[in-house]
Figure (cartoon, rainbow, N blue to C red):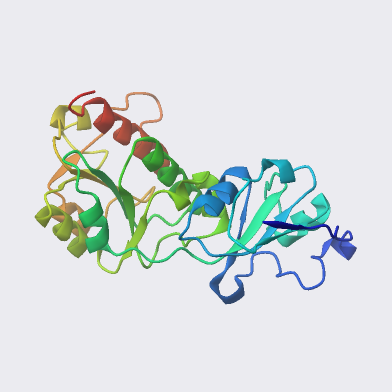
Amino acid sequence: MEIRKSFRKKPRSGGAPAGAPAAGNHLGGSYWLYGYHPVTMALRNPARRIRRLVATAAALSELPSTGPAGLTIERFEPAALSALLLPGAVHQGLAALVEPLPMVDLPSLIEDAAAETARLVVLDQVTDPHNVGAILRSAAAFEAAGVILTERHAAPESGVLAKAASGALDHVPLVRVVNLARAIEALKQAGFWCLGLAGEAETSLAEARPAGRVALVLGAEGSGLRRLTREHCDQLVRLPTTGPIDQLNVSNAAAVALYELVRTAPGR
């Protein structure tokens, strides 16, 4: 990668440098990744198309030695870099303007998730990008094969989601489907036992002792799983919370449930 040694002037009145996309704008579908892990993982992902790479002088040493051929690193002052991004974005001196990742369809995900103990996460209208990003991070930590979302009423791919995922967006496939009930049926036909997490379920996840290929189905906070989603799950299970606050954030629930599946998997 080539380094362009052209420090940008500080923006006037808090605005972005001339010619820079406005904060939050997606130029032709592109968006800004920011922070060490999201940017460096994107640089290592051959499927990721990077349009611009921006770094402060202090952050240059943090970049990998190899990256996309012909990519020029633009050197920015910290204030100028902050002006490219949404207010309050913690960029750690690194940002990249990227294209959304290539779409992965459900049949391809099922084919790739061929292991006898494969795990998937299915999200029923989870719209908060922080939650989806955190779930991706847990999916990467506990070796889930992918995360499935609805096309509508779900968090879009964005810098906020990528930051919360801490690099997992470029590691764990994110699949969007038109009809979640049909997607669950396709998973069941492929041999996945589909477990819906619901606080009122009689059986805990540990008591259910799921074996083989498992898909965890989680709903949005507040509304939880929709009726049709519940009806298509093989079984409803709960996490045995007993404290004064008996409900977990959806991303925390996903992390606990994935840990339980890993803990009880054969060979552990």
